[in-house]
Length: 300
Length: 271
Ligand SMILES: Cc1cc2nc3c(=O)[nH]c(=O)nc-3n(C[C@H](O)[C@H](O)[C@H](O)COP(=O)(O)O)c2cc1C
Ligand code: FES
Image 1: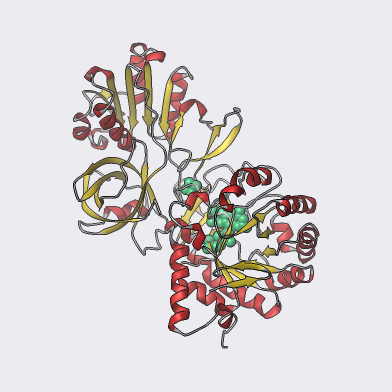
Image 2: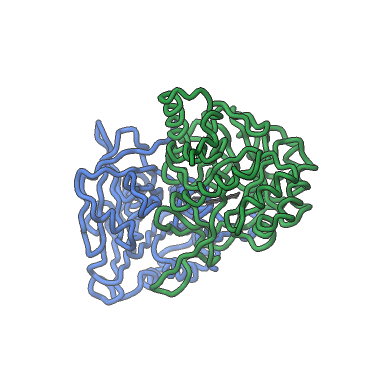
């Protein structure tokens, strides 16, 4: 079950997705964090962020929309207040980072690289719910490459760049960040969407639009992982609507060396553990020795 | 691990008033004792539409030797509650809880005033039960203002009478009790309650809580239960935000599920 994603060593390929597992402590009563391959924390910015006004979430068929707006306590408070708790566990801790400028990304990366207990950085260039930065970095190959270079210059930790699906050609962005030195890519972040209350004629979300996640987006995510896998040689972490071990394995067949579980945690806090268990059984039943042996084995 | 998702069995699910249901769920004996104000997340296993679990305040709770029974009082307002309403005896549901914080109780307060609007009676009924069994030894010390639009929307009265002697009922159309808004009925009596001797607990629609906030003008200890749409219910997604004043008096978004659902009324910011 062990995997090594560009130097990030994990005991299994199952990670929690940023923004869906808090800082780990929220679910620590439900899940033994020691069992997880990796734990990606809520997106961190240089300064604390208030986030968007409510309502922030709305359910959809087989999914949900969110417009949290990256509410977070800021990188300094994270290092001081949250990291010591996570360091008690034998789990790879991945800090998801966000900035409104190249220099903010660089500063957050620098602070986290100096802290004890962070095993990799995941650079969010793809949040659809914030006005500045975020999406624009993720939808322009040049800007995406520049963010990657700036972060790489500040750290020796593995750098994972998290891509947005809200672009015409996700593989082009993936190639751009690979050339700029990214150690791995993770995809997908949420798809922008909206929902309307017909009774009042108003949007369900105060922010009007939000990011769609959950099983509704799985086919899109799978397609994008497969497309990116044709174009890059760095490892891919697959994300989007994974609810079961079978879902996770499909992503691996499409080319993902590891997966992240997001929205599934909300409806089943033990989803990650059940998925780890299911993958183990699958490998065992099919006499597959290593995760590596199924990654990218799609037959067309 | 300490917390779990429990598989519960619906032992009753009755429409006790139009569009208002009382569901009893039989749960394993290790389900923790809920405190008044706490809630549970409920979902039907395997169902993806509706996708998210529903947060519902805990209305009643009892424990026998082998199991516990959770009472959930809910109004049918959308797809999720519609499907819950269709569950028959013997159906299985997934429950997590008890979640969130509870009302803070100051035993030294002489008057306990509970103000409920509509389905807001649910958490306050559990509070009335708790107060009756713990601090309110004198029947005069607890007053319950119960408001609803019309007589047919008043729920849980018989249950409440077991724990509370002074119940003032108000309906918007006067079909039961006083023809008045519940907040106006309370305001008429406000002189009876000295701020230093009174604790107020409220739950109901936003306009009701807001008008209570104006009436109390920050002079009373008052806690309110708030509602917001939820996804995780445990504080992880920050989806259920409400604007409140933080320790320094600045605006912050707190999580209804984990930082609430009970908040000090004075801290709530009306946006
Ligand atoms: C409530 C919520 C908050 C999120 N916050 C972040 C975030 O802070 N940073 C980030 O990179 N992705 C964030 N995401 C995106 C997820 O990490 C993930 O990419 C996406 O939800 C798709 O996976 P899923 O369908 O398994 O949830 C968030 C998603 C949700 C639902
Ligand atoms: S519902 Fe997720 S933080 Fe409250």
